Image (cartoon, rainbow, N blue to C red; front, side):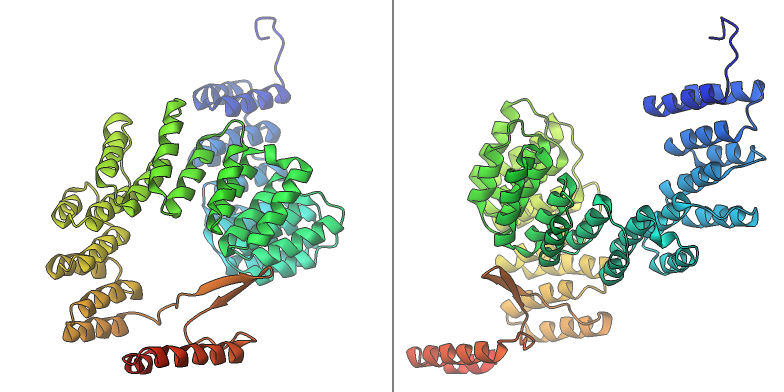
Length: 503
């Protein structure tokens, strides 16, 4: 073009910068930057927007700001691109600074402006700031825009404020598939499968067709609460719409069936995948590992290797976990060495946790201790916790004390750490040590979050915690428990004293 003496214009340079983004080639982008300065396009707002976008996509925030400052007459697009640059690089204060400068310059912003600001609040967990921007959006009537409202829902959801997210969703006069998906994904992230399913039904009644993202999110949320009937309904729906051919849907189905205890359902979904990717193999290996089927998990992993698919750290973690729970020490050590020596994968803290647990469960405490002392990174809380658990099983108080000191220093405000060591002392009947650890826990920690159990009856998931009386049928349940305990007392003459302790 230049050889033909045809002069480039702003559209030419804009296209060139977009090509640099596609090729991820910032070097050519810098050369073009120099060229536009020479030919007088450096002050052009249209070209400047493309240049700032290039630097933003490459993570060169300072270069993007210099290019932005070089344009004297800026339009709204350029302001939005600069704000988006800061947001994508998690620089919220700088994004707000640009927004305030823009308003001082007389520009009010558009839907892209407010979407960028809300995205930054969602990414960094700034809910209070997000609420302030929400107020400004309402005053400017941008809450009526579908895109802005969808990002608003997402912001509240990422800040774990599901009630405000739902309020924003219910206030929407017009919705599209994105807004429905955003709300369903929000319920999926907080593990509320029942509400997600209810919203899916409303979505279908409103004549919106769910897409791949909708169904994946539904399956994820159902897996969190082990809602078997909902999973089967969604599975039927995916087959009806032909979505079972999507690998992401199959992966979500494998994970959901596994979480609700149906390993057969997980395997059938795996078998239906024509070309499983690494995520698919990882999902099924984790499913078998989760159910304690170590040999089956190993066989699937070996089958994957036979297809010349390169494993990653995540699937190795699944295999090591399977070996740990299955007590397969020799095999676990083999896979750890395969990962580090053959595939040259640097182990993460989670891999060392599995290795420590593997050796500790087998009673090889000295070897596990050696792993803890020689690992190139500081052992994390999970690694130390696994080691203390092994010390408890094999009654080695001294090594447990060594690990507990490190654990208490690492996470001094976590009640579970003190409970772990207290149980260790209790198993050895060291009641003074038990009292000492529990006093430390009271002094350093807030109240412990209780664990809960669950069961699904006729499609409803019921959850229970210790001494729970919030269930609508708690009176009948406690009456039945009393009857069972009475029968147990009658059958075991030694049991009454323990029953008293139980209450």
